[in-house]
Image (cartoon, rainbow, N blue to C red; front, top):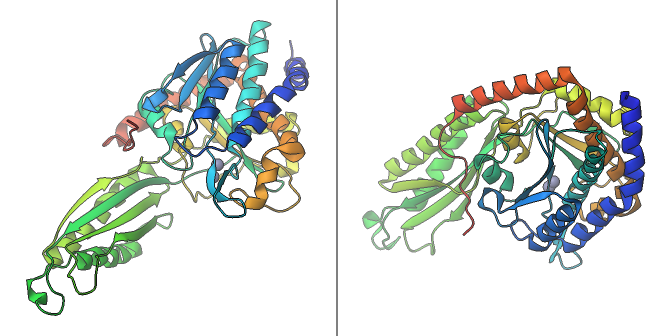
Amino acid sequence: MTREELYDIARGLQEQFAANAEEVCQTVYDFAELGLQEYKSSAYLKEKLAELGFRVTENAGGLPTAFMAEYGEGHPRVAFLAEYDALPGYGPNSDQNGHACGHNWIAANCFGACQILKEMHDQGLFKGTIIYAGTPAEESVGGKINMVEAGCFDDVDLAMQVHIGGGEDTELGSQYLAMDSLLFTYHGRSSHAAGAPERGINALDACYLTFNGINALRQHVTPDTRIHGIITNGGLAPNVVPAVSQSKWYVRAADRAYVNELVEKVINCARGGALMTGSTVEYEFVENGFDNLKAQPELISVFAGCMKAAGVPEKNLKTALREPSGSSDVGNVSWACPTLGSNMGIGNLDGAKCHEEVFLPNCTGPVGFAGLKKAVLAQTFMALEAYTDEALQAKLAEIKAKLTEERTAVAGQSRVHVTVL
Ligand SMILES: [Zn+2]
Ligand SMILES: [Zn+2]
């Protein structure tokens, strides 16, 4: 069977099953649950997948709203990275949760691809394992990080995600910054700030001397570096020398190994602030450590063909690697297995972008559903390529071997700092 014949069968199944993916899109949109609270969303998705015959493993990575669902057997093992956490702060009183990042749409496009591939598997047109990875809390702690560290992606040959985006362009060269989060706690000694200042040890001084140290450090870092901090405890009253202070920091750069170096330097700035004031300082990593996304240009060019076949106009396909800015836990997956991160412009005419309240209606309904169809097909085609194209299989194996080497070389402390009891 030719590629076009195979693709045409997938197109027919997409039409046949479109209402199911749309229902998933709308249902998860209506649940609008925040990260790690996606109980209804994950239960619903697990049930839908179990109905299709997927084998569901709950509590993936120790997170109650994370799961892995598999169908089929053997290689290629292709994983679709579903998300379903919403964002807070929408509605007339800014007190409602909303899917303004369209993670409901991601949950749905993964479901659509899985349903088509399951059917093709049953018809003998796809061999391998179809994996729906239910990954919670992308917007907050980064649930994929727990799942990666628990080994959920160790035996995956290809992982992919199509995120929703505003505008016309579809970006296939998404990249993200690696990031660690640090909380410094300084301990000094209280005294009357006017009556007996000489008896005090000012923990707040230690804290802002850390800011000064880090501001000096900024001259001597690579341009991709981002270090940003806030004071979360600056004392209680001006007439009491602060005995305790705290600052919280995000340290980001384009490469995990470099973030590890930067973190050491940032910790030294805090040690310096403490030393100068006679305070003591302790630190902890308070959120999961995000890794940079390792973009794979050779996979991106294959995926571009799939996007085109799925109906994305060539002029809107951007395959060049983008300068990384934010961070995402898709990055951590990309260190465990060959990964495609992408952002599909759904052609909304209102100019709205993700996280804006006005973007909400695009994440479901006619505009969202038109994009959903393309995202479902593009991912289905990519999985079919991984099954039929031997050169691609060899490339995936080569990338996987290289990743294993690189991951070992940069291994340091565990990157998981979030546990759910
Ligand atoms: Zn977002
Ligand atoms: Zn998002």
